[in-house]
Image (cartoon, rainbow over all chains, first blue to last red; front, side):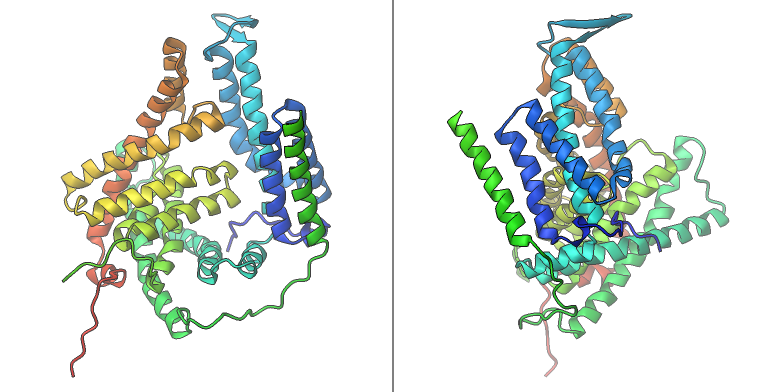
Amino acid sequence: MKSISLYTDRKSVLHSLDPINKLYYIAFAIFIPIILPSIEISLACVALSFTLLISGKVFTKTMPAFGVVLFTLLTVILIQGLFRPGNATILFQAGPFTMYREGLLYASILSLRVINIVSSFMILVLTTSPSDLVDSLVRKGMSPRIGYVISSVFQIIPEMMAAMETITDAQRARGMETEGNLRVRIRAFFPLLGPVVLGSLINTKERAMALEVRGFNAKSPKTYLLDQKQYRFSTVIQWGILFVIGCAIVWRLAS
Amino acid sequence: MKKQSMWSMRLSTASLVLIPVAVGINYIGKLIVGLLKLPLWLDSIGTVLASILAGPIIGALSGAINNVIYGLTVDTISFVYGITSIAIGLAVGILFYKGMISSWSKAAVAGLIVGLVATIVSTPLNVGFWGGQTGNVWGDALFATILSNTHSTWLASLLDELVVDVPDKLVVVLVSFGLYKGLPRNIVQVYNSDNKVETLD
């Protein structure tokens, strides 16, 4: 079954770090450009994230994620450049449209912010397996029940997608059309969705009973099936990141 | 029989297990829309269904976890829109508990309300992250038109979100209500938290 997780198994330093460190890094990449709002700082953050992604040997895997946002960013650049209120300085003209400097600048700041956030999240997503992340968070004090919910999503979605493929084939075999004009396609929506929903809800009843029988609701403290993974440098990295954020705040206040 | 408060934080195992399924239904909804090339998102059917079945808390949790998972697997920015999903879950849960999603016509009104809630929560996020756009072609075309005519980013952004979100949530609530009505009662009963245990002796 195809996994929905983007985790890519490679050998790198980034892969061997505690997932919590990567959460700290995300906070770092988001807060530093807010504390020190200049294009140079944002560019430096993006460059740092890219370097880390390359060192983790996963840079090429970021392309689909950037593909999702880049298209929207392109329209943002177009619309803001052409129509943003306060546009005054003409950059160039193409037919009836005029591109303005202010809007373009504003759009590039927005784009930089989005690219920065996406690339910092990509470090977490591409170099951490979901189960390791959940395990680390539960050991840090997250409710094990929520931990179960999150890791079971990663199992249930491929299951449901497989079920949907089966149902699509079955309905097509019975003569349902999935292509054609809008009315035909709308009518195909329910025969596809209904059985998946019903089937998965019936499964939850059984799953709930199976969990209850195994003491899912027991009040006693939970134990772990797997030994705690040994991560190195965690304290250093986390305090280091907090220190840099602290320095940035001081710098902002002082200047 | 007195109903238990809808804000009960006592999450039963059944309702917790419902959350991953709700996320899965959201995913499948989006998948089918892609397959059939329908002009809406329809990616919150699971959240709405979970709210109807198990109340606003489970609905909000489903919404939040949905966007976390979506953020981790497809589109990072959807983390931020988790707030919208939480609002949708809460709104549907409250409306259903108050008996405002009990017939087709009431469900349609509820759908419009949920759409408005989603619009109001999403607009500031759109302005902050995308300069006001939604990423939907039709909505963004309207955004560009209004922006060039009125020079108000907020008005343009609000209307951009409104024309996309309200029809979408209207359809989502109607579809979810239809699915809910079609469910066998023994499934619905599993999530009912106000059931009393009676003994025969």
